[in-house]
Image 1 (cartoon, rainbow, N blue to C red):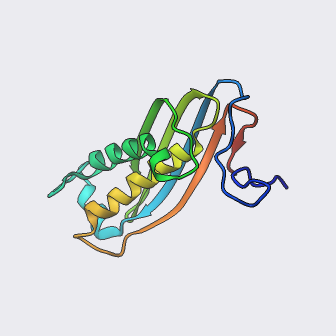
Image 2: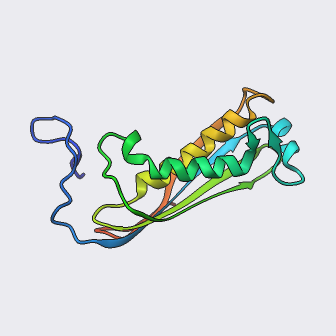
Length: 158
């Protein structure tokens, strides 16, 4: 089993040194299931709905993109990265749930997994914020990395 890369030999936190790595094209995809409840999802039957804070899905998508761009400000040991792509989508799964998906890309010395996870999480949290007036029983679940390519290794969730 690999060692934790963000902990040094003295068991102190460290930012990983990527200075010796090559710049490569890196892509990460993440997703989350958001159980909005039937009461909320029914309001989206004819597309996006306008709340007092704006169009719900559009606002959540923008929040997800912003979260990806701010990942190094939110997660202490993440490197700031020049993102070349950030796409966030929201799709209804059934009468109670939506799936939030993100795809983030960069040409850098380190990957964009955290940016994809941040984008997905930021969008999901914004959905909660925008829909909590209808119900506080919203559950965000299964936030996960789906795929990562580029760099030393690739990953595909099962």
